[in-house]
Image (cartoon, rainbow, N blue to C red; front, side, top):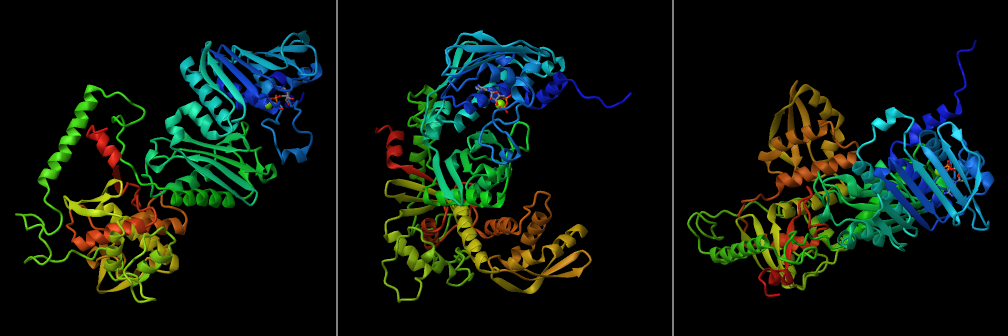
Length: 637
Ligand code: ADP
Ligand code: MG
């Protein structure tokens, strides 16, 4: 007697169901995908008790003949592929021929279908092992599938079903994923007879997002559109100021199907790096259209993950599409406190609101009463002294080129950085870049910022054409330095300074190995190191931008970063992380008093530096308040 036996069909189907049918939402996914494959323009989804009791999908698609209906519930029965070649160029949602038999194996399934060219329809029913013969049935053209009592014969599975509200939550999310990918199809979703969504056909994803999540979210999204080497990328991404605390607002679609894709998610995160904080998630809805032969969708039972023929090309295309778009959009954070009277989502002002606004108003009034005019202030007791006063020493050089780093590089790079830079009106001899102070002065004369002052040795406040801007001095300086460093790094190693007395640093044994293996990276940063003992290294040269007394501290941080468990894998990303760190260490701090020329110079850089609106750590560098907003705050409007 043989020990190996062929499993009965029902068991095979139940095993298949174990993979594809996890909960009511999975049934909805499979059935709606079938409707879409049948060319439906309208799909109605009705669920009861979270879908545990009933799921009914009605479509206006091509329907099935009596013969096809009888076959549709058999295992491995599909109209979508015929041979192996078809498998490598899937253009339909389904192709495995598994959904209907799997569902029928674990629930009471009933299908009524009519082809548009036939006068009458047919019906078939299945529950567990029992398949009823096909009978004639009335009904409009299209297909209706009813699934009752999911997992009625699989108690282990039924136990894992959650409460109806939780299950319907999954159904709603599932429906949204499909509806976002298929904007031209009309969808209606009801739960226990109550309408959840009625999504009318839309030409654009933005309107569908508006129907699902409201006009506020949809209206603020930035369009992305790019087509390159047979790959079309389109969709919408969130403004960096609208980041979220979870990745729930992230959708990727491939050829009309929702997928999860780490490579795309990573490319997006990379594009937002420096624009949003580390623990925040951008919002995005991105659709990729590609020839089906360049992607393998047959790697996951529910097809929610795929394998790309060229994932590097995809990665860099997503990254550059978003980066380019961000550079062209104005991403300065606009100060718009939630729930304030000019927040569109809230029109009436509650007593709490009114009090809050009044407190804000009073704070501004007090602030201006206390603060003396910004420049040429007589020395206040314990306050900042003006330049030239006895005991005043100029603060450390502010900008990279003033610190001797990369000589004329900054001015040169800013010249050809192709940013919409206000050009200097001061004539300077040809071939010679304008001196930084001169350039800054010129920028100011162009009217970018007026009446700049430093407050609390921490923020710079300036008048702009349509309001005022408040700048975080550390964050902006850090961004300026980061930009200069990353440009210099693109051209070669960072400039380094020889240290008169080598700086020594104690390291743990395992860090010695890290130092050795990262030699080239340390060299690129401008370090020259040697072993000074079994647990000590000496730095003979260090990046120019760092003050000698900070070299040891920075080197320690670099070592920690290099040996961190979550250290970036690629050299490029590591270097990027390290120059962010360096910029942070070298930038002016909160509490550092700045001379007027330094303030002017720093503010002038703001318009010149790419993404100057965010520091490399992702905190905003500035807040803008428009006159309009001010007037509303003061109830003049
Ligand atoms: P697959 O979608 O992988 O082919 P299914 O088990 O989901 O497998 O469906 C089996 C077959 O039944 C499909 O190939 C299709 O021909 C037919 N079918 C299923 N649902 C519908 C529908 N709503 N309208 C028309 N035909 C359908
Ligand atoms: Mg299917």
